[in-house]
Each structure stands twice: as structure tokens, then as C-alpha cells.
Image 1: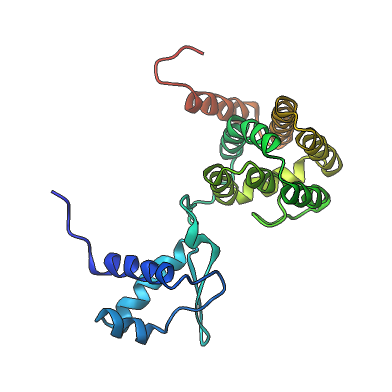
Image 2: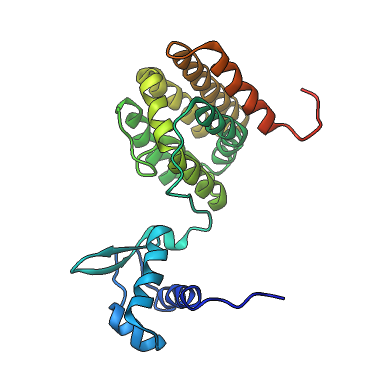
Length: 246
């Protein structure tokens, strides 16, 4: 038997339906909490609770004294958990192993699409590797690479991975030589521009594996070998089917 939907959950869905039926775009405002309460015949506090739920997913933004604004995440199907902020070696390796598993395929897809505007955006994003801080998703080369694949699910998956692991991602940026990072991004883009999917895939894998090795090496300088071995073993265990020999 399907459990009944709670009032706040139902109202949250109604507000999302309102955003879509009115074709409200990111940056546009929703009706006031009072207007929504009157429309759906609920109390203003109930509306505010529903809006807070949407704000937690990044779908709307509540600005005190200004109103409620639609945000880009309203159209996303894959969302990150904003309360999960790992910052240990195991988390860093887990992130990189996930990226090694999916990003070479993303690069191969991007090479087959070769959209002119996407290539131009990646050209701009290449230079962001020289910056110490790069926001996710704006200006992040790998996010633009995923967008260039033309696969929305892969793009959203990568954005979520990088957002969830934003602190470990930033730590990796401090660890890896930014000039080398820039040059490797340029090499990946060169293969994509030429439409060489296999080479783009190979260069992407090699790039991420180099970052993984650099993170492990840097961490080993600040912790003991048992922690490194435990993180690597945990990563390999998580990536392998149960009962399968390594």
C-alpha cells in the first residue's frame, strides 16, 4: 500500500508544478508566500517549509525582503547532498576512482559531438586550471567537458560528484601542478577538436590517474603508510562486486 503524501510534500510538488506550468526561468521570482498560501489553501508557515525544502535542493533561493527566486537546479534530475562534506583520503580516492570510471567515456562522447560553442567554452575553461580556485560548475573544465558530451545525465552526475566532494576536489587542486593540469586539459581538448574519441578517452584517463597518484603521494607525506593502504584497499573493495577476487 502506498503511504499517503504529507501536506508539505504535496505542497512542494504543487509549487514545482507552478514553476513549470508558468515556465518560470532561473532568476525569475515566485509569487509571495501569502499568495501561494491562498492559492493552495494552506498556511503561510506551511508554504515556507515547502520553500525551504526546495531551497535545500538548490531549486529556489529565498532572499529576505526580496522574494523567492527560481534557481538552475529546478531542472536537474540528479542532485547532490549539501550536508555531506568528506575530507579524508578515502573520500578523495573514492571521488577520483568514480571520475576515472566515467570521464573517459564522457570525453569520447564529446569528441563525437564536437559542438562549436561547446569547444569554445572548453577553450576558455582550459585556462581556469591556472587558477587556484575554480567554482563548480561555472568555468570548470571537466564540467564543460561533460556538458559537451550532449548527455544531460552524465553532466549532472559529474556536477553532483564534484559538488559533494568540493573540499577534496579543492585539496587536489592544491596538490596537482596547475601548469601540468592546464597542459593536460589542452591535450584532451585537442583530441576532442580533432574528433578522436579514443585519444580523448585515453588522455582523460591518464590525466585523472596522474591526479590520483599525486593525491596519494601528497597524503603519504602527512600521514602514515597504514592510512594510505587502508584508503586504497577500501577504494578497491567498494569498486569490486561482492565475492569477486582482485
